[in-house]
Structures are given as C-alpha cells and as structure tokens.
Amino acid sequence: MKKLNISPLYLIGLTTLIGFPLLAWAVVAIVRVWFNQYYPNQLIDMFHISHQYYYLIPVFTSVGIMFGLFVIWLTELEYFEKSLSKYKNLLSHYKLNTFLVVFLSVCAAVGEEIFFRGALQPIIGIWATSIFFVAIHGYFSIKDKRINIFAVLLTFFIALIGWAAQTYSIWLAIAAHFSYDLVLLFYYKHEQD
Image 1 (cartoon, rainbow, N blue to C red):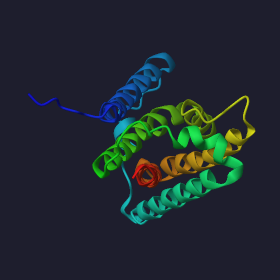
Image 2 (spheres, one colour; image 1 turned 30 degrees about the vertical axis):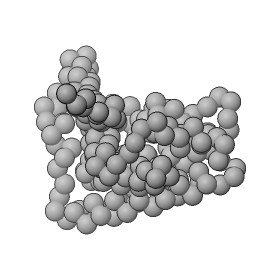
Image 3 (cartoon, rainbow, N blue to C red; image 1 turned 45 degrees about the vertical axis):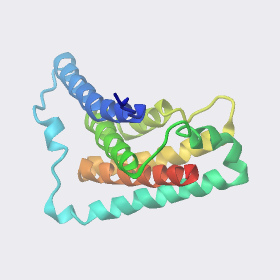
Image 4 (spheres, rainbow, N blue to C red; image 1 turned 180 degrees about the horizontal axis):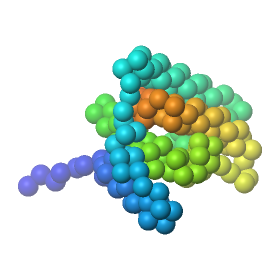
C-alpha cells in the first residue's frame, strides 16, 4: 500500500483557515458578554463592500504585490540578508508546489484577516492590532535592530490594510494579504527550484 505523503503545510493552512475565524467568533462572543456590547452581525457585516469600492480590490491586490516585491528586494540587500535569512529559509524543509503556494496564501489571508481585522481590531485599534500581528509572526527582536527595521516597515503595511478593512471592507485587507503572501511564497518556491 502506497503511503500518502501530505505536507504539514496543508494542516497549517487548514488550521489557519478554520482556527482563526473560530477564535474571532469566540473573541466577539466574549466581548459581547463582558462589555455588554451587542453587534450580532459583526463578523458578517465586515464582508460587505459597496459596489462603488469594487475597484479598490485590484488596487489593494497591487499594493500587496508591490510590498511583496519590496520585501524580496530587502531580503536580497546585504544589510538585511543575514537578519532575514531565517525567515527566508523558514519553508526550505518543505517542497512547495503551485497549488500549495495558492492554498497557503488563501488560508492565511482569509483566516488571519477575519481574526485580526474582524475581531481584534475593533477592540484594540489599528495600530495595536498591527503591532501584535507583526509580533506574533516573530518579526520583532531584542537583539537585532535590522529585524526591527523590517518589522516597522511591515507594521505600516499591516496598518494600511487594517485601515482599508475598517474604512471600506475586509475584502481589501484579504486581497492585499493574499497577494503579498502569494508573491513571497512563489519567490521561495522559485528559490527552492
């Protein structure tokens, strides 16, 4: 019998896609109870986008692509190369294929944005959510100022998409996050090949 060889990245992707929205639902429910705030459709309404703002979806997709290309350029600079190499090589143990790259990009964009922009941001605000987002991805360092420079740049990008989600629709944040991850993961895939 042939052994099924499935990358652990599929499990990570599914956990992100399902786990973060469940966590978002829990956070919204707790806030309702503890703070007596009742907004029954918060996690549904954030997906609403007025037809007059549809054009912003490709705009923010482009923003994500441009920031992804900027990050790739940064990782190639000698100044950042050593500091960012651990992040660049994070997926080197896994064989990436095109489906996996798209799958992980969708899972991260949808799952993480629902939690961070849909549940957390309305409670703690854009900047605190952005800093927390970057911090849990491991981009702040006590020892390495170069990582912190990168973390600050990433925080501004995350704050921008947080603003877009708050002002227009979470679809803009999802589009930017998806395209950013897609560019980086295809770059890592290309590096592996």
